[in-house]
Image (cartoon, rainbow, N blue to C red; front, side, top):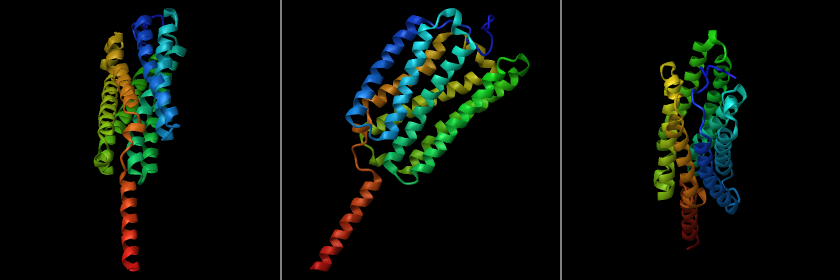
Length: 265
């Protein structure tokens, strides 16, 4: 345990009441997502699993923060667990955004999804040396460097979503729920990404980690808001319109039928 509560630990003790209440709120979205996914037989599978994992990791993180005794909150183990859980929860939503658009677009979806996954994995891998070096006073500056690189890569992946969405030309194939879902989810991810980058900077890290309000306001609330949006606009309702691929297939089918009828006549 770091008795001085210095870097990389936050200088506050997490509120058990606040984290417990927020965990209860997250559980509502988690249950709603799970029920709807079961009703849809976890289709589309990729999105269903990604958002289920995101819900569960955020819920578990809040439970850990609410139940671990105050004297153990700033231990290496708890610090590593809570950071890992939040990182997974955040990254699953980012990949989920790409997966949703590609579910409609269909073309080259594997390359786009692999690129998004590579981005979030690389960002996560860079956090390993950042956290390991954080406990060595002589390597703190290097730790901050890795932390900044990780946050920058993750933010880049979040921003790249918008040109990918534009390139896919799927906006006109989306119903109103899908548009709301993608707008809200991507903006919430962008908000957290920008905040993470600011938090990774040495001049802001201590200030931001001095009060739990920053954590709830700019990390947890956007993630939870994104979760509820996914639950309300579940893919079983937001993926109801024909995708571009399906429309193209239908047009080809109609053309073939018309050609066949002409030849028959």
